[in-house]
Amino acid sequence: MSQPSAETMIEARAVEKWYPNGFQALRGADLTVRRGEVVVIMGPSGSGKSTFIRTFNALEDFQKGSITVDGIALSNDLRNIDAIRREVGMVFQQFNLFPHLSVLENLTLAPVLVRRRPKADVERQARALLERVGIAEQADKFPGQLSGGQQQRVAIARALCMEPRILLFDEPTSALDPEMVREVLEVMQALANDDITMVVVTHEVKFARQVAHRVVLMSEGVVVEEAEPEVFFTNPSHQRTRKFLDQIL
View 1 (cartoon, rainbow, N blue to C red):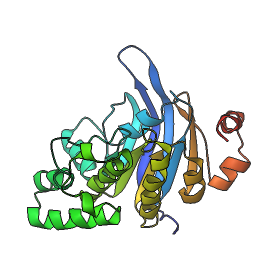
View 2: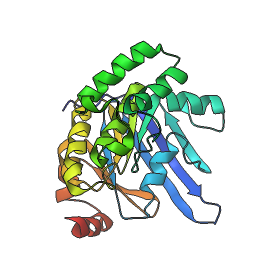
View 3: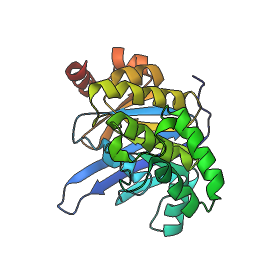
Protein backbone atom coordinates (compact mmCIF):
# COMPACT_ATOMS: atom_id res chain seq x y z
CA MET A 1 0.00 0.00 0.00
CA SER A 2 1.43 3.35 -1.01
CA GLN A 3 1.92 6.18 1.45
CA PRO A 4 -0.48 9.15 1.47
CA SER A 5 0.59 12.51 0.10
CA ALA A 6 1.06 15.64 2.16
CA GLU A 7 -2.07 17.20 0.65
CA THR A 8 -4.85 17.61 3.22
CA MET A 9 -8.25 16.34 2.10
CA ILE A 10 -10.21 16.69 5.35
CA GLU A 11 -9.42 19.12 8.15
CA ALA A 12 -11.80 19.04 11.13
CA ARG A 13 -11.01 21.29 14.06
CA ALA A 14 -12.77 21.53 17.44
CA VAL A 15 -16.07 20.27 15.99
CA GLU A 16 -18.99 20.40 18.41
CA LYS A 17 -22.51 19.18 17.78
CA TRP A 18 -25.67 19.21 19.86
CA TYR A 19 -28.93 17.47 19.07
CA PRO A 20 -32.24 19.30 19.66
CA ASN A 21 -32.81 17.31 22.89
CA GLY A 22 -29.67 18.90 24.33
CA PHE A 23 -27.36 15.89 23.97
CA GLN A 24 -23.85 16.89 22.88
CA ALA A 25 -22.56 14.26 20.44
CA LEU A 26 -19.27 15.96 19.53
CA ARG A 27 -17.22 17.81 22.11
CA GLY A 28 -14.34 19.34 20.17
CA ALA A 29 -13.39 16.57 17.74
CA ASP A 30 -10.24 17.02 15.63
CA LEU A 31 -9.06 15.03 12.61
CA THR A 32 -6.80 15.56 9.61
CA VAL A 33 -6.92 13.18 6.65
CA ARG A 34 -4.38 13.36 3.83
CA ARG A 35 -4.91 12.47 0.18
CA GLY A 36 -4.64 8.72 -0.38
CA GLU A 37 -4.82 7.98 3.34
CA VAL A 38 -7.01 5.27 4.89
CA VAL A 39 -8.17 6.27 8.37
CA VAL A 40 -10.16 3.84 10.50
CA ILE A 41 -12.25 5.28 13.33
CA MET A 42 -13.09 2.96 16.21
CA GLY A 43 -14.79 3.47 19.55
CA PRO A 44 -17.62 2.29 21.77
CA SER A 45 -21.27 2.73 20.85
CA GLY A 46 -22.36 6.33 21.32
CA SER A 47 -18.85 7.74 21.05
CA GLY A 48 -19.74 10.03 18.12
CA LYS A 49 -17.94 8.13 15.34
CA SER A 50 -20.79 8.03 12.83
CA THR A 51 -21.95 11.53 13.69
CA PHE A 52 -18.43 12.85 13.13
CA ILE A 53 -17.94 11.42 9.64
CA ARG A 54 -21.47 12.43 8.64
CA THR A 55 -20.51 16.05 9.31
CA PHE A 56 -17.85 15.75 6.59
CA ASN A 57 -20.49 15.88 3.85
CA ALA A 58 -23.16 17.82 5.76
CA LEU A 59 -25.43 14.85 6.46
CA GLU A 60 -25.13 16.12 10.04
CA ASP A 61 -24.76 19.77 10.91
CA PHE A 62 -22.48 21.10 13.65
CA GLN A 63 -22.59 24.21 15.80
CA LYS A 64 -18.95 24.99 16.61
CA GLY A 65 -15.56 24.38 15.04
CA SER A 66 -14.58 24.14 11.37
CA ILE A 67 -14.45 21.50 8.65
CA THR A 68 -12.66 21.89 5.32
CA VAL A 69 -13.03 19.18 2.67
CA ASP A 70 -10.79 19.18 -0.41
CA GLY A 71 -10.08 22.88 0.13
CA ILE A 72 -13.75 23.85 0.53
CA ALA A 73 -14.93 25.22 3.87
CA LEU A 74 -18.11 23.51 5.03
CA SER A 75 -20.71 26.14 5.88
CA ASN A 76 -24.40 26.82 5.49
CA ASP A 77 -23.73 27.93 1.92
CA LEU A 78 -25.58 25.39 -0.21
CA ARG A 79 -23.11 25.88 -3.05
CA ASN A 80 -20.26 24.73 -0.82
CA ILE A 81 -22.29 21.78 0.44
CA ASP A 82 -23.14 20.72 -3.12
CA ALA A 83 -19.48 21.07 -4.18
CA ILE A 84 -18.33 18.90 -1.27
CA ARG A 85 -20.97 16.24 -1.84
CA ARG A 86 -19.89 15.92 -5.47
CA GLU A 87 -16.41 14.93 -4.26
CA VAL A 88 -17.38 12.77 -1.26
CA GLY A 89 -18.97 9.33 -1.61
CA MET A 90 -20.76 7.67 1.29
CA VAL A 91 -21.41 4.00 1.99
CA PHE A 92 -23.95 3.41 4.74
CA GLN A 93 -24.60 0.59 7.17
CA GLN A 94 -28.03 -0.16 5.66
CA PHE A 95 -27.07 0.05 1.94
CA ASN A 96 -29.73 2.72 1.11
CA LEU A 97 -30.35 1.35 -2.37
CA PHE A 98 -33.52 2.26 -4.26
CA PRO A 99 -35.58 -0.97 -4.13
CA HIS A 100 -37.65 -0.13 -7.23
CA LEU A 101 -34.58 0.37 -9.44
CA SER A 102 -32.32 -2.30 -10.87
CA VAL A 103 -28.72 -2.55 -9.73
CA LEU A 104 -27.57 -0.82 -12.90
CA GLU A 105 -30.15 1.96 -12.49
CA ASN A 106 -29.04 2.49 -8.88
CA LEU A 107 -25.52 3.15 -10.15
CA THR A 108 -26.39 5.39 -13.09
CA LEU A 109 -29.08 7.62 -11.59
CA ALA A 110 -26.90 10.20 -9.81
CA PRO A 111 -24.11 10.55 -12.41
CA VAL A 112 -26.69 11.25 -15.11
CA LEU A 113 -28.85 13.62 -13.04
CA VAL A 114 -26.17 15.37 -10.95
CA ARG A 115 -23.06 15.27 -13.11
CA ARG A 116 -25.03 15.53 -16.38
CA ARG A 117 -22.99 12.77 -17.98
CA PRO A 118 -24.21 10.85 -21.05
CA LYS A 119 -26.21 7.81 -19.98
CA ALA A 120 -24.38 5.43 -22.31
CA ASP A 121 -21.00 6.45 -20.87
CA VAL A 122 -22.26 6.06 -17.31
CA GLU A 123 -23.70 2.62 -18.03
CA ARG A 124 -20.36 1.44 -19.40
CA GLN A 125 -18.62 2.74 -16.30
CA ALA A 126 -21.26 1.20 -14.02
CA ARG A 127 -20.86 -2.25 -15.58
CA ALA A 128 -17.09 -1.98 -15.22
CA LEU A 129 -17.49 -1.07 -11.55
CA LEU A 130 -19.84 -3.99 -10.95
CA GLU A 131 -17.18 -6.19 -12.50
CA ARG A 132 -14.62 -4.62 -10.20
CA VAL A 133 -16.63 -5.46 -7.07
CA GLY A 134 -17.37 -8.97 -8.32
CA ILE A 135 -21.08 -8.83 -9.16
CA ALA A 136 -21.24 -7.96 -12.86
CA GLU A 137 -23.85 -10.66 -13.41
CA GLN A 138 -26.28 -8.91 -11.00
CA ALA A 139 -26.67 -5.72 -13.07
CA ASP A 140 -30.29 -6.29 -14.08
CA LYS A 141 -31.55 -7.62 -10.76
CA PHE A 142 -33.26 -5.59 -8.06
CA PRO A 143 -31.70 -5.05 -4.61
CA GLY A 144 -34.24 -7.32 -2.92
CA GLN A 145 -32.97 -10.24 -5.02
CA LEU A 146 -29.41 -9.91 -3.67
CA SER A 147 -27.71 -10.98 -0.46
CA GLY A 148 -26.66 -8.35 2.05
CA GLY A 149 -23.04 -8.64 0.99
CA GLN A 150 -23.98 -8.18 -2.65
CA GLN A 151 -26.14 -5.16 -1.82
CA GLN A 152 -23.28 -3.53 0.05
CA ARG A 153 -20.97 -4.11 -2.91
CA VAL A 154 -23.58 -2.44 -5.12
CA ALA A 155 -23.58 0.49 -2.68
CA ILE A 156 -19.79 0.76 -2.96
CA ALA A 157 -19.96 0.65 -6.76
CA ARG A 158 -22.69 3.30 -6.72
CA ALA A 159 -20.47 5.60 -4.64
CA LEU A 160 -17.55 5.02 -7.03
CA CYS A 161 -19.72 5.81 -10.05
CA MET A 162 -19.72 9.46 -8.95
CA GLU A 163 -15.89 9.43 -9.18
CA PRO A 164 -15.39 10.81 -5.66
CA ARG A 165 -12.06 12.00 -4.29
CA ILE A 166 -13.03 10.79 -0.80
CA LEU A 167 -15.04 7.77 0.34
CA LEU A 168 -16.71 7.62 3.76
CA PHE A 169 -17.83 4.27 5.18
CA ASP A 170 -20.21 4.23 8.15
CA GLU A 171 -19.93 0.74 9.68
CA PRO A 172 -20.35 -0.91 6.26
CA THR A 173 -20.27 -4.50 7.55
CA SER A 174 -22.24 -4.22 10.80
CA ALA A 175 -25.57 -5.17 9.18
CA LEU A 176 -24.12 -8.21 7.42
CA ASP A 177 -24.04 -11.86 8.38
CA PRO A 178 -20.48 -12.94 9.31
CA GLU A 179 -19.94 -14.93 6.12
CA MET A 180 -20.72 -11.83 4.02
CA VAL A 181 -18.34 -9.51 5.84
CA ARG A 182 -15.22 -10.82 4.15
CA GLU A 183 -16.42 -10.15 0.58
CA VAL A 184 -17.14 -6.51 1.40
CA LEU A 185 -13.85 -5.99 3.24
CA GLU A 186 -11.94 -7.46 0.28
CA VAL A 187 -13.52 -4.87 -2.02
CA MET A 188 -12.62 -2.09 0.43
CA GLN A 189 -9.05 -3.35 0.69
CA ALA A 190 -8.73 -3.27 -3.10
CA LEU A 191 -9.96 0.33 -3.11
CA ALA A 192 -7.37 1.27 -0.50
CA ASN A 193 -4.67 -0.07 -2.80
CA ASP A 194 -5.92 2.37 -5.48
CA ASP A 195 -5.01 5.43 -3.37
CA ILE A 196 -8.60 6.54 -2.77
CA THR A 197 -8.87 8.63 0.38
CA MET A 198 -11.01 6.64 2.82
CA VAL A 199 -12.42 7.25 6.28
CA VAL A 200 -13.95 4.09 7.72
CA VAL A 201 -15.98 3.67 10.89
CA THR A 202 -15.70 -0.02 11.76
CA HIS A 203 -14.95 -2.57 14.46
CA GLU A 204 -13.18 -4.87 11.99
CA VAL A 205 -9.77 -5.16 13.68
CA LYS A 206 -8.15 -7.26 10.94
CA PHE A 207 -9.12 -4.70 8.30
CA ALA A 208 -7.76 -1.87 10.43
CA ARG A 209 -4.47 -3.69 11.01
CA GLN A 210 -3.94 -4.58 7.36
CA VAL A 211 -5.33 -1.58 5.50
CA ALA A 212 -5.31 1.57 7.65
CA HIS A 213 -2.54 4.11 7.64
CA ARG A 214 -3.92 5.39 10.94
CA VAL A 215 -6.42 4.14 13.51
CA VAL A 216 -8.38 6.65 15.58
CA LEU A 217 -10.23 6.04 18.84
CA MET A 218 -13.22 8.22 19.66
CA SER A 219 -14.87 8.35 23.05
CA GLU A 220 -17.53 10.71 24.37
CA GLY A 221 -17.40 12.92 21.31
CA VAL A 222 -13.66 13.52 21.09
CA VAL A 223 -10.67 11.89 19.41
CA VAL A 224 -8.78 10.24 22.27
CA GLU A 225 -5.92 8.67 20.33
CA GLU A 226 -4.63 8.23 16.80
CA ALA A 227 -1.67 6.14 15.73
CA GLU A 228 -0.38 3.74 13.12
CA PRO A 229 -2.10 0.34 13.46
CA GLU A 230 0.87 -1.48 14.97
CA VAL A 231 1.22 1.14 17.70
CA PHE A 232 -2.53 1.53 18.24
CA PHE A 233 -3.16 -2.17 18.78
CA THR A 234 0.02 -3.17 20.61
CA ASN A 235 1.19 -0.10 22.51
CA PRO A 236 -1.58 2.52 22.88
CA SER A 237 -0.71 5.54 24.98
CA HIS A 238 -4.11 6.21 26.55
CA GLN A 239 -5.86 4.17 29.22
CA ARG A 240 -9.18 4.68 27.43
CA THR A 241 -7.77 3.02 24.33
CA ARG A 242 -6.38 0.11 26.34
CA LYS A 243 -9.78 -0.41 27.96
CA PHE A 244 -11.54 -0.39 24.60
CA LEU A 245 -9.08 -2.86 23.08
CA ASP A 246 -9.45 -5.19 26.08
CA GLN A 247 -13.15 -5.40 25.20
CA ILE A 248 -12.81 -6.14 21.49
CA LEU A 249 -9.57 -8.15 21.15
